[in-house]
Length: 354
Image (tube, rainbow, N blue to C red):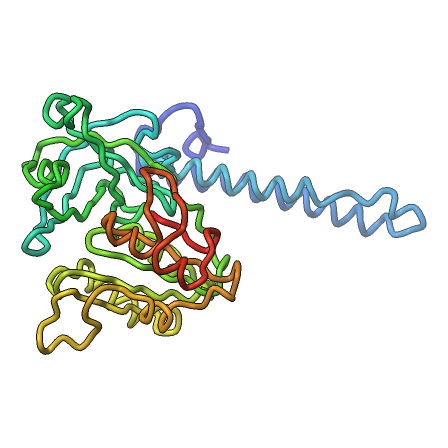
């Protein structure tokens, strides 16, 4: 072998592009030659040992399989090494911390309607949130003195992001401003570059694909984001067979959040998803339901409780909405089942309150 074709695995080549081609080609030639010789020798041994003792002396194919894997591995190593590129990084953990609050910078604010905006927070190093479904986060003011309750304790509120868990570099919330909502007003007063303290994920319901035949999602107002998270996760599975029905109640038509997303999902998955919108104060040309969610609407659109473990109803929204539909939810606990769903015969195992 001449000096120009000598393989040097320890140092960097003098002429980067030319040496990479020469060294890589020479190395691959040597490895192919070694593999060919081994295979030929193995074939010869197999051909000559075809007598009564052949089964005892027949060699395993494992060395050749390992050799092939070694060739591929070394080829990949040489490519990344000599091309000057780094191997792609696999993200192993979320930048969020389930035990501690971490400050995240507000990247941009996108107005959504008259009282709601999207708040996009920056995740470090272009990482994804990796939030499991279904889960949420809790937030508080970065300044511990900026937002407190009547007892002097920091105000903490749960929010569910609307950005996919694998979206890199961003964590997006859709937040409605309430006149009596201290946290929502605080977030709406943030400016780009300000920070918000976020902790999570807080895991809620361990959803499993195709665990249920029928799923009803009963949402109200801004309490739609956990239902969107679960729905998009389930429908994204090509093997999904569960049928989803959304009952979404709002004050007026212009208050219906994420309607574009739900309508798009209906068009994409007509056999497994349907959305029904209700408004308390409908306009004259409103084609849907008027008024609050009631027993007749639930009976018409939600699978009956007689399906047992094959039906599940998820409820989310303002406290009054949740209490009317499924009974009061005390804090992070589920509480007793009540409201419309109890009257219709559903059991606590069939209902989950976000």
